[in-house]
Image (tube, rainbow, N blue to C red):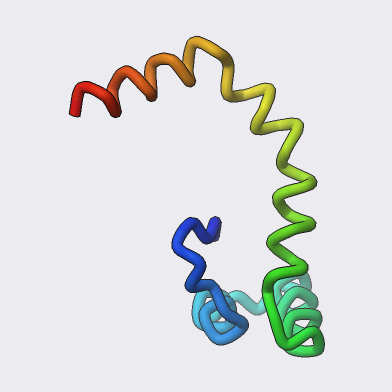
Length: 72
């Protein structure tokens, strides 16, 4: 559920979590409904993922992706 288009909303999260009765899903939805927005969640998520993403995206992977983009 990474939002690259900027159209993630509390309603969309609710839709994505439909059928997920886990405690985590309920806690997330409760927090988002109380906050009435998803922006804070996305900032925290991005901050938490920064290091793992930086480790996974090596220079070689970035070069390859940019090469594929430039050739498309």
